[in-house]
Each structure stands twice: as C-alpha cells, then as structure tokens.
Length: 121
Length: 290
Image (tube, rainbow over all chains, first blue to last red; front, side, top):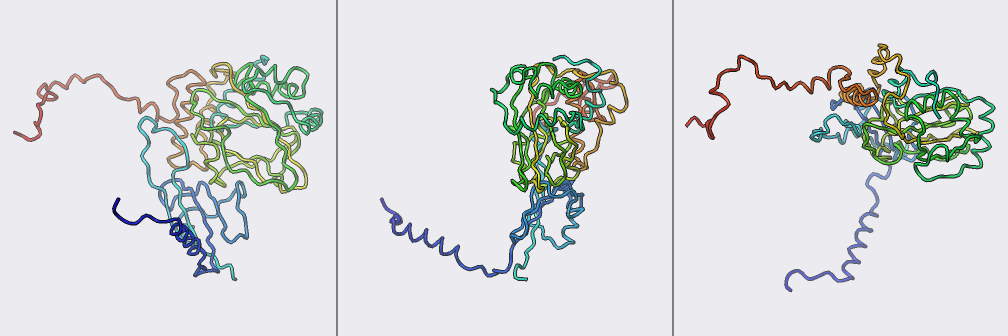
C-alpha cells in the first residue's frame, strides 16, 4: 500500500494532547462572558411582537429558568437591538410539509441574541 | 359511573377547553376530603398497568374515588373522555420547601399524533398553592401543537402563560398535549399535587350537555386569541380548533372564520360559456410555435 504514512499510536497521542493544550490556552478576553437572549416573535420580522423568551447567563450570577417571569424583557426583537443586544442568528422560513400545511409544532420565528458582559467590574 | 346530565360541562365550557386545553374547577373539593387526602398522598398509592379500568384502580370507598365521584369533577371528566375511562397512570408530586429545580417546559409522554381523540390529565391540589410555591406552569392553547416532550425545553416563558395559583381543593383538567412544567418551590412549605391521566374508552362525540350548542358564546370561546400566537400561528390554531370541534360534535362542516371551508372550494362544474373546444387539446411542443 502506498500513500501517506499511517499515524502511529504515539502520533495520535500527541495530536490528542495538542487539542487539550490548544483548548487550554488562556482566553484573550478573560474578563468577558456571554449572555444569551432567545426571542420567539409573532412573525419572521424582527420588529414583530415577542411571543416567548429565554435567557442564559454565562456570568454565573443568575440562573434564568422555566416560568421565571410573565413580562417579556423586550416588546419586539428590534427593541432588543435598541437595548444593546447583538443578533447572531435567526430561524429560516421553512415551507410546510405537503399534506401537513395546517399542522402546528415548535415556535417558528426564533431569534438568538448575545451580549458580552465584563465580569471584572 | 354515569353522571347526571345537569353536572356535565356546557358547550361553552367544552369550547373553552378546546381553545385553551384546560379547565380549572377552583376549590371544588371540600376541606374534609383535602385533609384526608394529604395523609394518603404522603404514603403513596399503588401503581397499576397502563389502561386499567377506573373501577379497578380506584374502587368505591377509596379517597381518590370519593374525589372522582364529586358531581362537578365526575361531570367534567365524563364530558371530556366519556363514561368508564381507563386509568393511564397516576402519580403523586410533592415539591419540598426550597427544593428542586424547575422542570423544563414539556408535554407529557411522547409526541401524540391523535387529532380525533385525546387523553385528559386531572391535577388535584389539596392545599392552596401560592406563586412562590411554584405551582404548575402551563401555556393555554398549546395543546394542539405537535412537539415531542421536553424538546421544547428551550422555551422558558411564553406571553400569556399561567403560573397556577389556587385555593385548596382545586382540580385542573388538561388536554394531554398542553405545554407545562413544575416550577421551583421557593417557599417554606411543601407543595402537593396528585395527577391522574384518563384514556377514553368511547368515541369522544357529544359527551357533554349540548343544550347550549347554538349559544354565540361557543363560537366566541373557540375564537379566543392567544397572546403568544398573535400572528399567523394564531390562524393555524383556529384551523386546528375547528378540526377538533368537528370531531367532537360530528359537524363535518363546522368552521371558524372561513379557513377550512375556503380550502374546499374546488368546483368541478364547467361553466356553460366555456365552449371553445380548440383549447385543452394541444400537441407536444405547441409552446414552441412550430
């Protein structure tokens, strides 16, 4: 058999170690943590009304959970932008499956926001 | 167990259930039963195989049977799942003081494809539930959405959700598909809830007191707008409610708005003026003009 030499066990070990080492590199922004806000909107338009919301707190200072409030943090997705959140993903518009056009399922208009928080302050 | 017609749900109440997926019977269980029930719930109840007849699981004289035989409770259950339902399962849920984490939002069991039948879950609260005790959260109107159990665990809050606060002796009846979750108990007292899931053993057709079927309030209930579904999703909810109401009433033409009716407008009658026989008989590649 010709071609590239096959990796030996010791090569594999060193690459595995390399992954661990690389991912142990200190963060360039050790004082920053991510907070996430997920908004479910009434339509695919970012400025439509909030129907549902979810938060995750990467600072560890709070633990948002199911049923922790009745009032949405923002009235619309656009309001979240105005409040300083950065939109990083929105759901695609998916055509309904043929024959199941009236079926309802998961909330279709999901918008994911983030902001970075300084935990040193 | 056949309930007197006067204790059955009205058409307006059934329409409320179809729109919301829930019906609350506030404080219907007397304190003398509630006090007796706490002790039994703390010791637990024997389990039975899925689908065991009600008379076997809860024989006459047991505390649960006394609860289910209360005319208001019996009438509501019979209206929804019919006489002699089977017991799918039952469970006692006790949330200790400052104990436990909130459940992720979910619907019970697994994705359920039924559109012409449903199970009912009875939730009984023998003690009052305050907001900080973390009563069950449910989201009215979510019961017709096809999702799989806690796959919706990413949803923490929806506009219009209900965080249960109730007096002692309250019974809540839920469609099996309702999105819900037990909230964290942040109080100093335990929270008790007893749940029974009923399976129908008859077709769920006109099981309630239909005397008021023509009351305009029926259509008003079925048309209820949901705060979390103000956009196009709300219209799909109306379509699905109309479909369920067709099943429950046997009225195959029932509609809310004009959505289902309009979709069936595909007339096959050819109008008398459509007489030009040159059309509709073309040859292959006619479009090239050769």
